[in-house]
Length: 376
Ligand SMILES: *Cc1c(COP(=O)(O)O)cnc(C)c1O
Image (cartoon, rainbow, N blue to C red):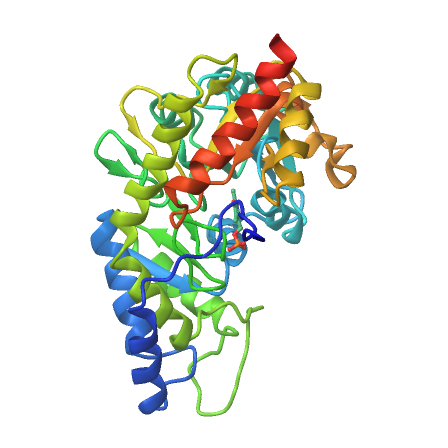
């Protein structure tokens, strides 16, 4: 019997999405405006306890508008981690600004506060005040936010949280995306909930939300005709896709439980092997978007990955650090060797919320046999 392919993180519909889409179609609200959009934004506000949210057509667009709101423009410096998906940092280049890349620390794999501070000190000595610090909560694990917030306050630099992978994660009792000045979610198909494609910008300020909405809808001035005095974008989410988001919001808590349970299953079933799992850092709660582990070596990582692939199971190396990407090879980078090591030895396991127990068992068996064979 041909068993079906197991994907890393496939979309997982609740069945409730279609109702919202049908209703929007029946009422002809098939534009980037309508009730689904309003309701979706309100649902996100309620869930995260943020006062304002703007639904957009991607997380990348939300990051771009966040930088724009902070006035990031040509030549400005923005500090950000090297260990992340390229979409975190590309919007800095859209603005013709200069990223300064910071290595990770080994507890959460996110931006290292000590290195961040060193970079800020260096920049200050050169008379440069960065326009923003971009923090990412990778794989659902929150960065060391109290340290980062202290440093940001000391140097008077605003924070953007890229919480694209961390919707539903907590720092203390605060939701990912609400600790900084601005926060970003992604609803791309592989994220913990999806609108097929989409994102959201979170803010504490109504004025910021209004300004971002203005830019996201082609920056139309008040006039009967179309008049423009600023550069705008076409970044708004469609009301149809917001309907998918509404259906997904109803199962978000459930999806987090399912993802956390995947992690717990893997960790317990592989506990006796020489594999290191990304641990939940004290005072944080992770949505466990992806279960990630470190193998003893690059060779072992590849053996496991290839053995899974041979059984039609998708796993993936951890993010390739941006300073190793041709596009960012010449960017200033504060290195302490952590992200390079993570990239060498790290693997993301299939982590979808629709994974069956039999599939988890199959994956565990394959990993066990590879590691066991190499250790004995
Ligand atoms: C997915 C992702 C993004 C981009 O979101 P899109 O909705 O795909 O544009 C940004 N940052 C991180 C860390 C991501 O994982």
